Image (cartoon, rainbow, N blue to C red):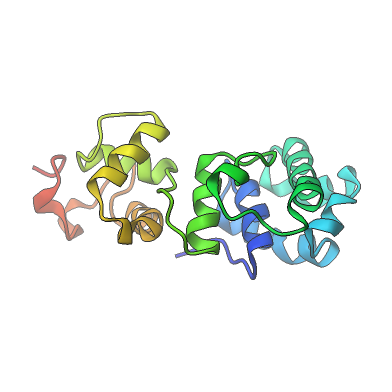
Length: 188
């Protein structure tokens, strides 16, 4: 499986912001050039937006993403002493960071499970498996955190992504290969 290939929490944060509406493969391909040019929040906070846009162009929405990652870096330097915030409440104050991104950073960067990152795979599979009826990511997160033991929260996002890419795809789920088909309302 292809997931974001980050080397530190700064890279995880920036790459997660860049991953909106694009693939992890695309973002991984930008990593080396971006972080060679801007290895720290301080370096990125002083970046020329046009230079950043050129590097991240393949990720789409490059103007707003460049503005957000530069803005997030400035706020990290100015308000958090150059350190990536470790709570959901602090992370969501950064430009370009919503609850999903904040959960990914806390879960996979700091190994602190405050919640579950709800992306398109988690949303689709949660509905298909009957874990939620909601379409709202915040409600889906609440439904999942109520249903699953906290020890699973850090792993649920990657498990659902892997299952959603390999078996339970959006267009043609391979129910015959699914290890949880007897529990799935859609497979019955």
